[in-house]
Length: 168
Image (cartoon, rainbow, N blue to C red; front, side, top):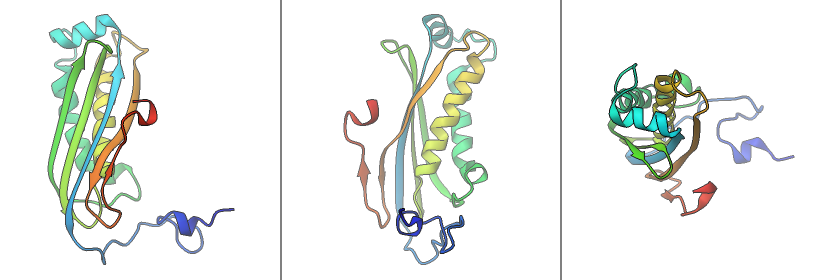
């Protein structure tokens, strides 16, 4: 059996969950980029593109929801630290070839812990918002490929996802 304390920092000596103390870490510039997509059918794609979804402008509402979610990540992820974000750049684009809405979030801050959870939360909530706004038209949409593309800053160093990783 693997000792959880050696592999996971969110467990104490008794194996109970805890929020990691980052007080001793140096403040550094942190950045994370995440992405994901939602697959839709041709009718839904055209309605999103033309602005014909009855609930409103799907891409603008989803963008706003994703930005709001990045700021609220610690409210829904128990061990996530509250951070003062420097910026949230969230974009949604339509991909006709894949019949998808592609979401990309880039988040930055100066802090003692990274912003990966904020980037992944922003992408996830933006995708869920697209689903919510389009579900009256199509119920079998698929949210897929939510992933961290890169992160920089901190003691664990930089990370960049390799091309072709996890089904890309």
